[in-house]
Amino acid sequence: MKRICALTMARNDDFFLRKWVRYYGDELGLENLYVYLDGKDQPRPEWCPEEVNVTICDKIPGKVVELDRRRLKLLSGEAAALLERYDMVIGTDADEFLIVDPALHTGLAEFLSKASIKTSASGLGVDVGQHTGCEKEISSSEPFLSQRSFGLLSTRYTKPSVIAKAVEWGSGFHRIKGHDFHILDGLYLFHFGYIDLKRIEARFNDKDRISGGWSRHLAKRARTINVISRRKALGWERWTDFARTVQTVVRPPYAWNKPAMFNLDIVVRIPERFREIV
Picture 1 (tube, helix red, strand yellow):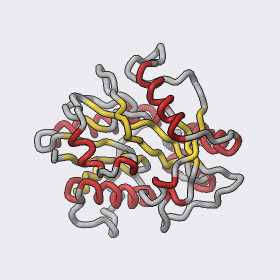
Picture 2: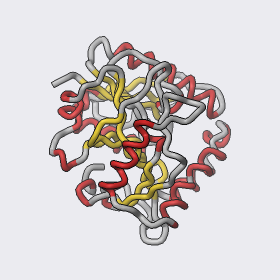
Picture 3: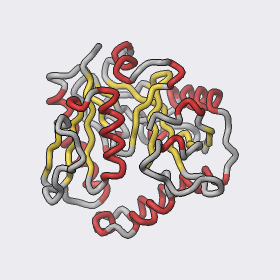
Protein backbone atom coordinates (compact mmCIF):
# COMPACT_ATOMS: atom_id res chain seq x y z
CA MET A 1 0.00 0.00 0.00
CA LYS A 2 1.34 3.42 -0.91
CA ARG A 3 1.66 6.22 1.62
CA ILE A 4 -1.05 8.79 0.93
CA CYS A 5 -1.99 11.95 2.79
CA ALA A 6 -4.62 14.66 2.33
CA LEU A 7 -4.50 18.40 2.91
CA THR A 8 -6.98 21.25 2.99
CA MET A 9 -7.27 24.86 4.13
CA ALA A 10 -10.30 26.28 5.91
CA ARG A 11 -11.51 29.41 7.62
CA ASN A 12 -14.58 29.47 9.87
CA ASP A 13 -15.88 26.30 8.25
CA ASP A 14 -16.34 23.66 10.94
CA PHE A 15 -19.51 22.38 9.26
CA PHE A 16 -17.60 20.88 6.34
CA LEU A 17 -14.23 20.45 8.05
CA ARG A 18 -15.70 17.99 10.56
CA LYS A 19 -16.94 15.82 7.69
CA TRP A 20 -13.62 16.20 5.84
CA VAL A 21 -11.60 15.04 8.86
CA ARG A 22 -13.94 12.13 9.56
CA TYR A 23 -14.04 10.92 5.96
CA TYR A 24 -10.37 11.21 5.03
CA GLY A 25 -9.36 10.05 8.50
CA ASP A 26 -11.32 6.83 7.98
CA GLU A 27 -9.82 6.37 4.50
CA LEU A 28 -6.19 7.38 5.11
CA GLY A 29 -5.63 7.56 8.88
CA LEU A 30 -5.97 10.71 11.01
CA GLU A 31 -2.20 11.07 11.28
CA ASN A 32 -2.05 11.51 7.50
CA LEU A 33 -4.34 14.57 7.45
CA TYR A 34 -2.93 18.11 7.19
CA VAL A 35 -5.29 20.97 7.95
CA TYR A 36 -4.24 24.59 7.47
CA LEU A 37 -6.33 27.26 9.19
CA ASP A 38 -6.37 30.60 7.41
CA GLY A 39 -5.79 33.16 10.16
CA LYS A 40 -4.25 33.13 13.63
CA ASP A 41 -7.54 34.40 15.05
CA GLN A 42 -8.74 30.81 14.67
CA PRO A 43 -7.84 28.36 17.43
CA ARG A 44 -7.40 24.66 16.79
CA PRO A 45 -10.94 23.21 16.87
CA GLU A 46 -11.69 21.46 20.15
CA TRP A 47 -13.40 18.62 18.32
CA CYS A 48 -10.40 17.90 16.08
CA PRO A 49 -8.55 14.69 17.05
CA GLU A 50 -4.98 15.11 18.33
CA GLU A 51 -3.59 12.91 15.57
CA VAL A 52 -4.57 15.42 12.86
CA ASN A 53 -1.76 17.76 11.84
CA VAL A 54 -3.15 21.29 12.19
CA THR A 55 -1.19 24.40 11.19
CA ILE A 56 -2.52 27.87 11.96
CA CYS A 57 -1.31 30.30 9.28
CA ASP A 58 -1.23 34.05 8.94
CA LYS A 59 -4.45 35.27 7.31
CA ILE A 60 -4.02 35.30 3.55
CA PRO A 61 -4.84 38.82 2.25
CA GLY A 62 -6.64 39.82 -0.93
CA LYS A 63 -9.95 39.54 -2.78
CA VAL A 64 -11.35 36.26 -4.14
CA VAL A 65 -9.08 35.62 -7.14
CA GLU A 66 -5.86 36.93 -5.63
CA LEU A 67 -6.53 35.26 -2.28
CA ASP A 68 -7.17 31.87 -3.86
CA ARG A 69 -4.04 32.11 -5.98
CA ARG A 70 -1.96 32.78 -2.86
CA ARG A 71 -3.75 30.00 -0.97
CA LEU A 72 -2.93 27.41 -3.63
CA LYS A 73 0.65 28.58 -3.92
CA LEU A 74 1.05 27.94 -0.19
CA LEU A 75 -0.66 24.54 -0.38
CA SER A 76 1.37 23.51 -3.44
CA GLY A 77 4.53 24.21 -1.46
CA GLU A 78 3.25 22.21 1.50
CA ALA A 79 2.31 19.32 -0.80
CA ALA A 80 5.79 19.34 -2.37
CA ALA A 81 7.33 19.00 1.10
CA LEU A 82 4.94 16.19 2.03
CA LEU A 83 5.90 14.27 -1.12
CA GLU A 84 9.33 13.77 0.40
CA ARG A 85 7.60 11.41 2.85
CA TYR A 86 4.48 10.32 0.95
CA ASP A 87 3.86 8.71 -2.43
CA MET A 88 0.78 10.83 -3.10
CA VAL A 89 -0.95 13.93 -1.76
CA ILE A 90 -4.67 14.61 -2.05
CA GLY A 91 -5.56 18.29 -2.13
CA THR A 92 -9.19 19.42 -1.84
CA ASP A 93 -11.32 22.14 -0.35
CA ALA A 94 -13.05 21.15 2.89
CA ASP A 95 -16.36 20.60 1.09
CA GLU A 96 -14.90 18.18 -1.48
CA PHE A 97 -14.70 14.41 -1.09
CA LEU A 98 -12.82 12.06 -3.37
CA ILE A 99 -14.95 8.90 -3.40
CA VAL A 100 -14.43 5.49 -4.99
CA ASP A 101 -17.58 3.94 -6.40
CA PRO A 102 -18.84 1.52 -3.69
CA ALA A 103 -19.56 -1.00 -6.46
CA LEU A 104 -15.80 -1.58 -6.66
CA HIS A 105 -15.65 -2.71 -3.01
CA THR A 106 -12.34 -1.00 -2.27
CA GLY A 107 -11.18 1.89 -0.13
CA LEU A 108 -9.63 5.10 -1.39
CA ALA A 109 -6.07 4.26 -0.34
CA GLU A 110 -6.17 0.81 -1.93
CA PHE A 111 -7.77 2.18 -5.11
CA LEU A 112 -5.13 4.91 -5.54
CA SER A 113 -2.29 2.53 -4.65
CA LYS A 114 -3.26 0.26 -7.55
CA ALA A 115 -3.77 3.11 -10.04
CA SER A 116 -1.06 4.17 -12.44
CA ILE A 117 -0.50 7.82 -11.50
CA LYS A 118 2.54 9.54 -12.94
CA THR A 119 1.74 13.18 -12.17
CA SER A 120 -1.89 13.56 -11.13
CA ALA A 121 -5.30 11.89 -11.02
CA SER A 122 -8.83 13.25 -11.05
CA GLY A 123 -12.24 12.01 -10.07
CA LEU A 124 -15.25 12.90 -12.21
CA GLY A 125 -16.80 16.06 -10.78
CA VAL A 126 -20.26 15.75 -9.20
CA ASP A 127 -21.68 19.01 -7.85
CA VAL A 128 -24.33 17.89 -5.33
CA GLY A 129 -27.22 20.31 -4.88
CA GLN A 130 -30.49 20.63 -3.04
CA HIS A 131 -33.65 19.85 -5.00
CA THR A 132 -35.84 22.50 -3.42
CA GLY A 133 -38.99 20.74 -4.58
CA CYS A 134 -38.44 17.59 -2.54
CA GLU A 135 -35.40 17.96 -0.22
CA LYS A 136 -35.38 19.68 3.17
CA GLU A 137 -32.69 21.66 4.96
CA ILE A 138 -29.48 19.68 5.43
CA SER A 139 -28.60 18.13 8.79
CA SER A 140 -24.96 17.67 9.78
CA SER A 141 -25.85 14.71 12.03
CA GLU A 142 -26.76 12.46 9.08
CA PRO A 143 -24.74 11.50 5.99
CA PHE A 144 -25.07 14.18 3.31
CA LEU A 145 -25.83 11.65 0.58
CA SER A 146 -28.67 10.15 2.61
CA GLN A 147 -30.32 13.59 2.34
CA ARG A 148 -29.31 14.63 -1.18
CA SER A 149 -30.01 12.50 -4.27
CA PHE A 150 -29.09 14.72 -7.22
CA GLY A 151 -25.86 15.98 -8.72
CA LEU A 152 -24.79 18.13 -11.64
CA LEU A 153 -21.96 16.54 -13.63
CA SER A 154 -19.50 19.39 -13.53
CA THR A 155 -16.24 20.08 -15.32
CA ARG A 156 -15.56 22.63 -12.58
CA TYR A 157 -15.09 19.84 -10.04
CA THR A 158 -13.19 17.39 -12.21
CA LYS A 159 -9.99 18.50 -10.53
CA PRO A 160 -6.44 17.05 -10.45
CA SER A 161 -6.91 16.39 -6.75
CA VAL A 162 -4.27 13.66 -6.42
CA ILE A 163 -0.63 14.43 -7.17
CA ALA A 164 2.36 12.07 -7.25
CA LYS A 165 5.03 14.68 -7.89
CA ALA A 166 5.66 18.27 -6.87
CA VAL A 167 3.55 20.54 -9.08
CA GLU A 168 1.77 23.88 -8.81
CA TRP A 169 -2.00 23.80 -8.47
CA GLY A 170 -3.97 26.62 -10.03
CA SER A 171 -6.65 28.49 -8.07
CA GLY A 172 -9.17 26.22 -6.37
CA PHE A 173 -7.19 23.05 -7.28
CA HIS A 174 -8.86 23.37 -10.71
CA ARG A 175 -5.75 22.59 -12.75
CA ILE A 176 -2.03 21.90 -12.57
CA LYS A 177 0.18 24.39 -14.33
CA GLY A 178 1.99 22.83 -17.28
CA HIS A 179 0.29 19.42 -16.98
CA ASP A 180 -2.85 17.75 -18.31
CA PHE A 181 -5.19 15.72 -16.08
CA HIS A 182 -6.27 12.06 -16.04
CA ILE A 183 -9.76 10.99 -14.91
CA LEU A 184 -9.78 7.58 -13.22
CA ASP A 185 -12.66 5.18 -13.89
CA GLY A 186 -14.68 4.61 -10.74
CA LEU A 187 -13.43 7.73 -8.95
CA TYR A 188 -15.60 10.79 -8.24
CA LEU A 189 -15.07 14.18 -6.63
CA PHE A 190 -18.28 15.06 -4.80
CA HIS A 191 -18.64 18.78 -4.05
CA PHE A 192 -21.09 19.66 -1.26
CA GLY A 193 -20.70 23.44 -1.05
CA TYR A 194 -24.16 24.06 -2.49
CA ILE A 195 -26.22 21.34 -0.85
CA ASP A 196 -28.40 23.77 1.09
CA LEU A 197 -30.00 27.03 -0.05
CA LYS A 198 -30.24 28.42 3.49
CA ARG A 199 -26.52 27.89 4.04
CA ILE A 200 -25.73 29.78 0.85
CA GLU A 201 -27.97 32.65 1.93
CA ALA A 202 -26.21 32.71 5.32
CA ARG A 203 -22.86 33.02 3.56
CA PHE A 204 -24.06 36.19 1.86
CA ASN A 205 -24.21 37.74 5.34
CA ASP A 206 -20.76 36.52 6.45
CA LYS A 207 -18.57 39.61 6.98
CA ASP A 208 -15.35 37.80 6.03
CA ARG A 209 -16.76 36.67 2.71
CA ILE A 210 -18.40 40.02 1.92
CA SER A 211 -15.15 41.89 2.56
CA GLY A 212 -13.29 39.32 0.45
CA GLY A 213 -15.58 39.84 -2.53
CA TRP A 214 -17.30 36.44 -2.35
CA SER A 215 -20.94 37.60 -2.68
CA ARG A 216 -20.98 37.49 -6.48
CA HIS A 217 -19.20 34.13 -6.46
CA LEU A 218 -21.70 32.59 -4.04
CA ALA A 219 -24.69 33.91 -5.97
CA LYS A 220 -23.29 32.43 -9.17
CA ARG A 221 -22.74 29.07 -7.54
CA ALA A 222 -26.35 28.94 -6.29
CA ARG A 223 -27.09 28.16 -9.93
CA THR A 224 -26.42 24.47 -9.11
CA ILE A 225 -29.53 24.38 -6.92
CA ASN A 226 -31.63 26.06 -9.62
CA VAL A 227 -30.52 23.61 -12.32
CA ILE A 228 -31.03 20.53 -10.13
CA SER A 229 -34.46 21.72 -9.00
CA ARG A 230 -35.70 22.33 -12.55
CA ARG A 231 -34.21 19.61 -14.72
CA LYS A 232 -35.16 15.95 -14.97
CA ALA A 233 -32.51 13.67 -13.47
CA LEU A 234 -30.89 11.18 -15.84
CA GLY A 235 -29.39 7.73 -15.21
CA TRP A 236 -26.08 7.63 -13.34
CA GLU A 237 -24.24 4.85 -15.16
CA ARG A 238 -24.87 6.00 -18.71
CA TRP A 239 -24.30 9.70 -18.16
CA THR A 240 -21.26 9.51 -15.89
CA ASP A 241 -19.64 7.31 -18.55
CA PHE A 242 -20.59 9.89 -21.17
CA ALA A 243 -19.24 12.79 -19.10
CA ARG A 244 -15.97 11.01 -18.34
CA THR A 245 -15.42 10.23 -22.02
CA VAL A 246 -16.19 13.76 -23.19
CA GLN A 247 -14.14 15.46 -20.47
CA THR A 248 -11.20 13.20 -21.27
CA VAL A 249 -10.95 14.42 -24.87
CA VAL A 250 -12.49 17.91 -24.94
CA ARG A 251 -10.71 21.06 -23.73
CA PRO A 252 -11.85 24.68 -23.59
CA PRO A 253 -9.99 26.94 -26.04
CA TYR A 254 -8.69 29.15 -23.22
CA ALA A 255 -7.21 26.35 -21.04
CA TRP A 256 -5.90 23.09 -22.51
CA ASN A 257 -5.36 21.62 -19.03
CA LYS A 258 -8.98 21.94 -17.89
CA PRO A 259 -11.88 19.67 -18.93
CA ALA A 260 -14.82 20.79 -21.08
CA MET A 261 -18.24 19.28 -21.86
CA PHE A 262 -19.87 21.56 -24.45
CA ASN A 263 -21.52 23.57 -21.62
CA LEU A 264 -24.00 20.75 -21.05
CA ASP A 265 -26.00 20.72 -17.81
CA ILE A 266 -26.40 17.03 -17.02
CA VAL A 267 -28.29 16.28 -13.80
CA VAL A 268 -28.09 12.71 -12.53
CA ARG A 269 -29.69 10.76 -9.70
CA ILE A 270 -27.01 9.52 -7.31
CA PRO A 271 -27.34 5.75 -6.71
CA GLU A 272 -28.40 4.35 -3.33
CA ARG A 273 -25.01 2.68 -2.86
CA PHE A 274 -23.42 6.09 -2.11
CA ARG A 275 -25.90 7.06 0.63
CA GLU A 276 -23.87 6.27 3.75
CA ILE A 277 -20.40 7.41 2.64
CA VAL A 278 -20.34 11.12 3.53
